Length: 263
Image (cartoon, rainbow, N blue to C red; front, side, top):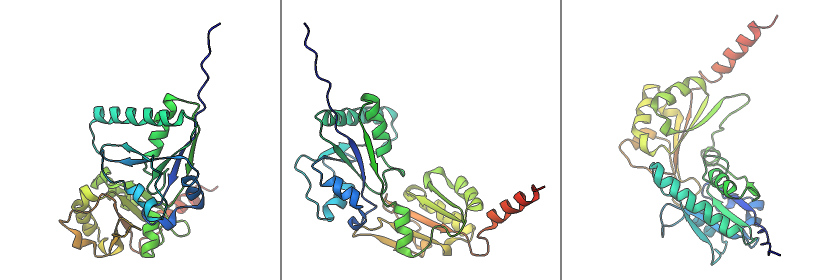
């Protein structure tokens, strides 16, 4: 009679949203997961580099477990390099989970919004579909930034769009005609071009730049034109609002068209 190897009992993969920088924004559920005895895993751009997500937890007073595991996610557009990196990370997570212990993956901001965790969870489940994935939501960088500067993102039935600035100036220009508020994430590569567009659209005065919101070195700039020529941090965004006289034009137009279709 052949021996049958036992099926491994996998732990859960838990994405813990930490908020964009202020550890006081970690939710009670996220805090409990971090103190549950699960293995910590956290993202780094290269081996030996500091982790912004890990720093948020550390500044909150949480003791980093001795066996906390850095996972390397290189900042590159090389498809081959990225594919190999994702394969290594996914395989390592499956190895950690195969022992039956949960793994909490530390995520800056919110784990469901422009975050690495969604891709990681899919890659892990492709290798082991039985693995349970739990996503703990948190505060996004743009909602924290709006609260920091005291600007509502949307009121009543205002329209709101959130995009990475990498979509390009032409797309941003179009969206400014379609939405009352526009959030531009990761503006570093195109900052000067975006500022030139905002100047042409007369929107400099109703825009605000926020860098590393909630972190000790947070920076808020309301005179966004002063940023021209500056190299800003990767974790930066622009809040752009249309002038008060133009707000709501889109929804009023939609209502008029809807009313025209009424019998």
